Image (cartoon, rainbow, N blue to C red):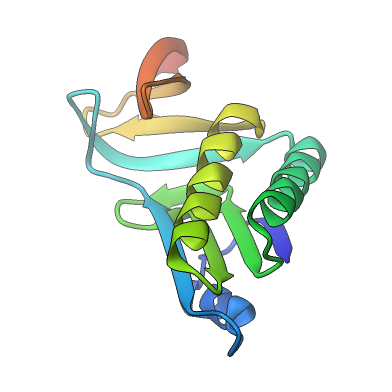
Length: 155
């Protein structure tokens, strides 16, 4: 089991390799990527920042909880911070387990808890040159814009 906040591109193949074991019959990989439209606005990129020491601790706690709850230690989670372009992965979660149901459930548990508990923020960069810090809340399994924390023109 490993978790990390990283400033480099995420390598999904590396994560898959870390959880691979012949005892596992299922491996689930989740990649969260920067999309081109959010909340009806065209996005040109994204910038993630974090309260790093707290984010690392909370991410490790979530992975430990998932390991205990779903009976697997074959879990790797990375969340990227810094500036990302469209299509780049901001988060990757690899979970392997002898059974597919538990692998899916553990992966879902990790991303849902990460979104709720880990202090990572995103600054959306829009095609029109503006940027806005976006806070989100969880509602019925979807992210929804709650409020804009700050905005300004392109730097």
